[in-house]
Image (cartoon, rainbow, N blue to C red; front, side, top):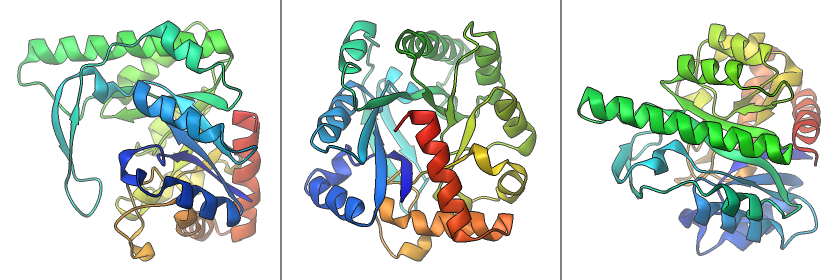
Amino acid sequence: MIIDTHAHLNFNAYKDDSKEIVDKTLKNNIWMINVGSQYSTSKRAVEMAEKYPEGVYAAIGLHPIHLAEGIFKTKIDQEEIEFKTKDEIFDYDQYKELAKSKKVVAIGEIGMDYWYKPKTNIKLEEFKNKQKEVFLKQLELAKDLNLPVILHCRVAHNDMLQVLKEFNWPELKGTMHCFTGTWQEAQEYLKLGFYLGINGIVFKMDLEEVIEKAPLDKILLETDCPYLVPSQAGSQRNEPIYLEYIIKKIAEVKKLSVKEIEDATTANAKKLFGI
């Protein structure tokens, strides 16, 4: 068994066939955590997870991008993706109520993202401060519920590390989703006890030093589907079954067998998320 610790089968990309994809994934002996990026997708992740006795879990949280209203573009895949966001307010009690489900195993994805910059320095500082404020509230929610966190970070590692180091909860644990930082930055997160999430981004940028040097007991598998589809899959939409390409890449870099990677990362996911 292997575990996709960061999937988005709760997103609109799967609105017509999410059940078929989930069923196919489970038949291939792959478990998954569907991750919310705002209240609506968090709620959908929980609803999906509750339909299955095991193998399908949920994480709930408000992504920093959804703190601003606008149309954003990203080239994280072969095609440029355009999406519209609303300025969503983080409702602590609403998310806490959603977390009553036993299928909620983490708070995420949450964090800080400076990739999309407002046009003026004043607006930029306001956006950074707003992100930090909401991030801290969600860390408090994780502390309140004693849950791990799934962290998103782009162009904000210095500020994120500062927040994490200053946050007053020694038991804070979690994973750096889609880690794209340097080995030096990776070491800082590892010192704090965090895991590193490895996905199809490894086929788009050089992360071999991080993969090679990171302890195997601190690596998690993820797809971030529908995004970051490995080119070997020959598909326009990512799925949890394409974890096989990530596993082979990690095995190649670390000079270990596929089974060693599967066994270790599955044990890591079960330990962190209590599944």
